[in-house]
Length: 357
Image (spheres, rainbow, N blue to C red):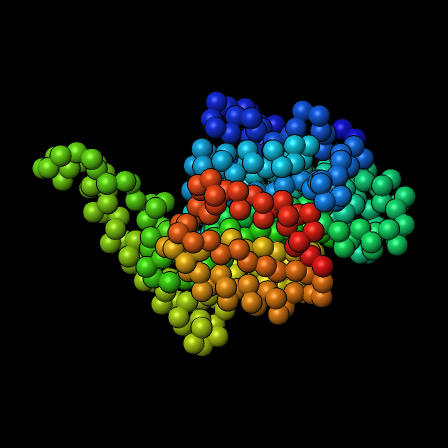
């Protein structure tokens, strides 16, 4: 099958080993691997399970390329024959989810080429010319068996990554066609997510993205530096914005007004939706949380509450586990030799069978 994925460019950034498909979507394709379902490698992992057909990384809001690359490199070592699809996150993607749909329009063809008929919901008659043959030659019993086996590994970071995964899900649901596309059976890793709207942590998160770093000029020159002047102007506006978000979300909780619900609370709720036919987690076959008490942007109690809710709402046979780190900050649980060893050992074991029953 000929590839329909169009490359935009390759650059000299830390992600230069990936092909940039759009402003926020990148694809790493191992040299010996194509994206066609018929040619996807079947090499097994040490746990005798095939490696994921694709790894989907949804990075945190405003993540820099050097930091993202530090998570991609270990995946290349763990699953050397597996393609990696990266979807970056910016502040507008959290507060205006549909702003990411042009990027999702680029990402979906990658998913279709990798997974073929695995993305079809029951009742779909065809998958276009690309997968009609594969679908017609697959028995219903085999489809039912494969539906329980994850073939996609999703790794999201912070609320920004959570928002992008939900945008991808809603984009698939919005496509009015007889195909009824959805994500294939998958495992999901939540790193430093999801968080709820708390004033201080939300302000800190937004300030990391919107405020420039403090000026390093000596006194009194730093007072008149562009960085200082911008911080003086933006900081009050940022406090006003967070105050409005907090007030709106408070009213939503008290009076049950969903239209006032904060994007963070809405995302956390939808990540635990196993509703047949439309729930984001409907085809999730296992979940793992990485978190710590020292995370200043996402409270550990929020993560643990979400994890407990997932255990209650998940369909039978779906395993949910958490890995609590000590002394690590936001999206920093893999830093340091000891933490990195534990982190990537958990990822490896999770895919090989510890994540589902």
